Amino acid sequence: MREQALAEVADATDLNALQALRVRYLGKKGELTRQLKGLGALPPDERRAAGASINALKEELEDALKRRREALEGEAVARQLESERLDVTLPGYGYPVGGLHLLTRVTNRLTDVFRSMGYDVVVGPELETDAYNFQKLNFPDEHPARDTQDTFWTEDGRLLRTHTSPMQVRYMLSHAPPFKIVVPGKVFRNEAVDATHEAMFHQIEALVVGEHITMADLHGAINQMARALFGPETKTRLLPTYFPFVEPGAEFAVWWKNPRTGRAGWLELGGCGMVHPNVFKAVGYEGVTGFAFGFGLERLAMVSYGVPDIRYFYGGDLRVLRQFRGEL
Image (tube, rainbow, N blue to C red; front, side, top):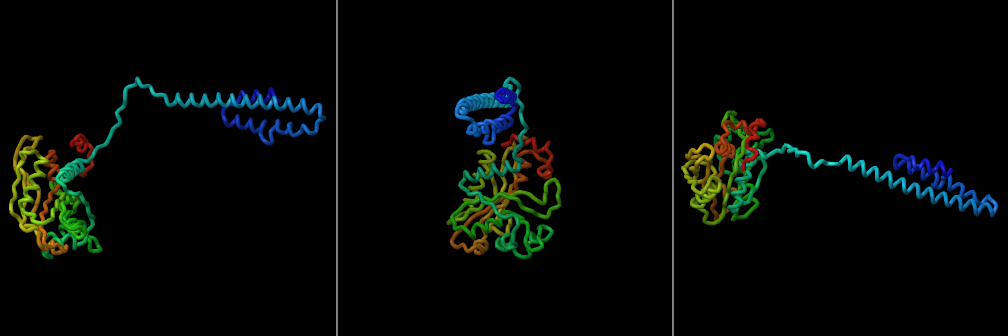
């Protein structure tokens, strides 16, 4: 038994086989265990000698099992290290990485600018009700923006928001002035798609409400934003126009020099004005004034980065998207 057991231990090729040998010889029903239990049937003189012999074999077998286990574990570690070996002298491999979409970069840049001016960034739902999107913003029933050709309506009477302005009403209904917020997000209009129009696009809108807010504050905020975006020499202008949710209303433009083309000129960005009293009445505000202004992000990105067609933003063409991977 001794020669056979030690030979089998030495030939064991893995830990499972080694454990099977331990059970076979030293387990509760193992061969050595049975011999120890059978010592009681021997005469006293023979029992002592047989017990010493069995215990000696048991110790020798346990030692052999231990040494073989250590050897097998060492071999396993060596194989693992070999499989994980890294040759640090080989040249490195640059894994391809993605990047933020150009519109995401423009949005992040703008929200950073507004945060630096003390604005809180808030977002709202893209599926809106007529009350938030039109009624509470002083849109009369006959306003052209209510035409179903301009708006995507759902069967339950809701609509995909046509501007980010509904968040003005939602925020004012749940917050007391004074405050300064900016709202970026997607908007939807039933447009005929071409190089400069899309049915889905992005806007960003600012709203400031408090005591004694004036058009001078509005112009100052637009100046500060424009200079942060385009440089300290940037000029701005306001041109009177009509929007139902502001009074007075204006369109604002910036005079800037395009760093890509080197050409300078006026760039019309968006609309602005003092919040209409009817809007404040709809949310229950009294004794305050405020201003709002907003613009489309696609137009700003197209002019700033030389993108000739708005559809390039959504076409998924990697040749277009990769051009702006490193843009700030």
